Amino acid sequence: GQQVMQIPQYQHVQEGEDFTTYCNSSTTLSNIQWYKQRPGGHPVFLIQLVKSGEVKKQKRLTFQFGEAKKNSSLHITATQTTDVGTYFCAGISSNTGKLIFGQGTTLQVKP
Amino acid sequence: DAGITQSPRYKITETGRQVTLMCHQTWSHSYMFWYRQDLGHGLRLIYYSAAADITDKGEVPDGYVVSRSKTENFPLTLESATRSQTSVYFCASGTAQGTIYFGEGSWLTVV
Image (cartoon, rainbow over the protein chains, first blue to last red):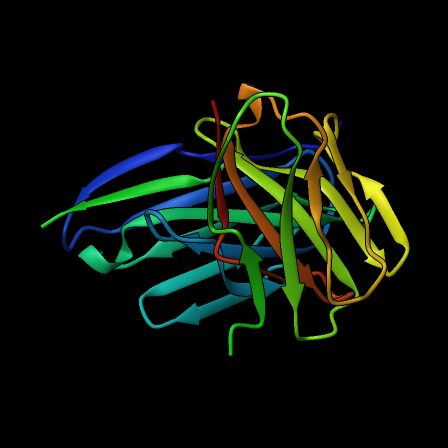
């Protein structure tokens, strides 16, 4: 079946270091969304990317959608302790129209 | 202005009992979803609904029943709870464009 794979599963960084998580789909996606879940909380929508090659920024966060619309990345510059949590990508399949979540990347930031 | 609310937030029940988790949204979103989240499995879709009186199975529907008689409500029932159904359950609602908004979660323990 269709899968959305996310790597790495876990990442520990020192505060101030950069962080990147990658999302790869086995099929073409019509769009990709990113969510953040703080420890003990619920996933919160961050952003949606629709166009091939699209890049969007939110302060220290940079989101990219691949040219083939099969992969995406989230890059955080100069991490802070407030960035701690699990980041999920979710893609809508161009074939089925269903939203599929990646397994998430859990980020720990050491102060 | 909660938007989407779940109840109960925390529940302990015994094996074999019927449990219903409630979900209510105020946005009039057409789509509603139930996910469960377990360590190592990310977010897994149980059931979803595209509109009132329309429901469909997700990835892990066995042991669960849903209904959607009104657009704003989407209850999830565990007909005979098992220990393997101990989990955090998230209700979500969303638009046709795919962005979804999660409730705060219901922590269910089956003993």
